[in-house]
Length: 227
Image (cartoon, rainbow, N blue to C red; front, top):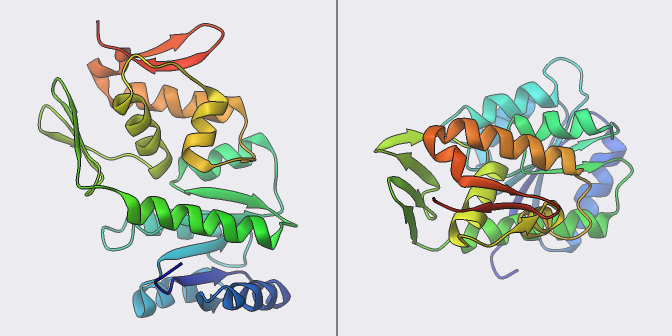
């Protein structure tokens, strides 16, 4: 990638930090490390990373709490987060997405896959065009990532925002759950159909009366269609 990407890797296992830093440095990333949640928050303030690799299970302030703090902070919530954990159950994956994580890898993971995920997230972050999608009184600003309904601002996690952009930018087009995962996260993303369903349910709730326009297409998936 043309510009140097600043990566903050957070894990309480030094050997994992060493491997991650070694491999990412070879890819010309600028890599910073932290061994716990408190150190992570301090280094975010100090270095303003472009992306964060965040272990879930750490002593003291764990990855879930750190992720919540980042996503609730106006200064840092735009920073993509990839959660790294040994947990791989559906519930753990859904929980990670629900708190605002942008991606999820289970240990042990392939460095090639990790690097591909990092680059994909950075491309999406930097590739957002100065574009407005507006359907009725629902307005999406793809550059500022703001969504307003009747001029009232609605906050979405990154994954839900991406799903909403996909559906509203392609009205009346039906996407399968696998299509949604592929468009939002790329190939071979370890998320179940149930996780996509959870996102759709929450999107409908947050969109209030506009939620009904996210239609379920039997045997296919979902589409955005106004009556």
